[in-house]
Length: 472
Ligand code: FAD
Image 1 (tube, rainbow, N blue to C red):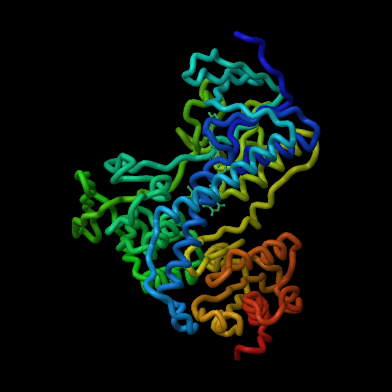
Image 2: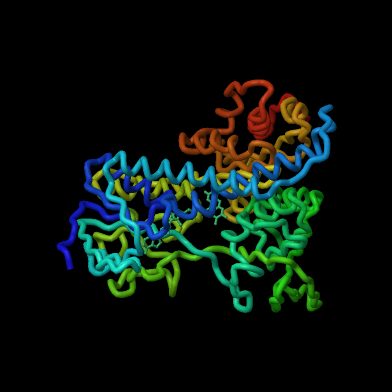
């Protein structure tokens, strides 16, 4: 075996956790290697997650707008046709441009990129087996190792993924034709986003959710509104419903579900199973080193500095506890590397935004109304509908609202929940406000441009203050 290459830090995984950590470490003067088993850098997020799903959401939204909404704006079109192959090729181009940018970013910071499946051999030592071309196993050593291997889809017993009829989100981002009937098991963000894509492109979509509601983590009022709007768009949402069995046939899959003791069998062309993701520790060798996880196959346990139970080995992102979100992984990446370098790195988990990119979008940060009640926190709640803003009217959007929750005594903002156009971008102001410990009065007295969607946030804050100009 050739002598091991030495680094200050080896990062395993190049997703939004891994590549951000590698760059931050290089900025702080460390000699860094980043090991990635995929052909392209960027992890799930860039290759088969956030980016391709948003590219398809945008493309399918244009298709929907042309067909359903252009006429009301006085724009007549001829017959509109879907060219799915071009739509998919465009999505792939976006992915490739962005993953190439990550490569350039790492190269620009003189980070050694290694392609292969990394395995922990010992604290400070990683091996990468030969990739099939007869190479010898490569050996790398470092003072510190950062695990950023992300997550993988959870498989449901009886619904084994076959990549054709019963699929994960990865295949559902690349169907070569529009499924006539698409079943989706799991009404979380991934299921609802991909359900929206294929419904807009012509599929009859059924969402099967075991819980009494979709997107269960949302503020209740927002969740109910989302459910109503998605149903009005044509999604068949079946809550309190569990899949009993699935029978794969050559061209379809027959799914039997049960609700209130009643069984029903439906035939789908494809079944997307999106019931959640689990930390990816496969082939990593953490057991051998005694790295602790929460239960069998659960998140890797870390301390406040992101150190695992082996102090020179750190972990971040989907691999550890907390919301499985790209920006959370990147924030932890910076914090972990800064801790490693003896600086103070930390993440404020009370102010992590989350977004569902349906139309309308849903974005939230902080506590929901239910959480505030459960914790018996005295709160003021201000809501304001987008239909009350000029900008939304110009756009033809009447659905949705902003809901702002502040502490009844201190007025400090505890949470903001938005369902409506451009919610994903509007939530940034709320995150900043919460980071600065702002009050609802701070937002209410900040001048917001007119006409903008953000005026609804200001009005919600004014409503919490009981001095809204537009509501009585
Ligand atoms: P990952 O991005 O999963 O990267 C881990 C990398 O490690 C992978 O590239 C993997 O190949 C590599 N790896 C694993 N094991 C090894 C090994 N042994 N050796 C070498 N390499 C290894 N989040 C959002 O914030 N917004 C969204 O809109 C959003 N949309 C999503 C849509 C879909 C369809 C999916 C599936 C996810 C979405 N997510 C979204 C979640 C987001 O993608 C993840 O939270 C994020 O990618 C986690 O980043 P990470 O760096 O922890 O891991």
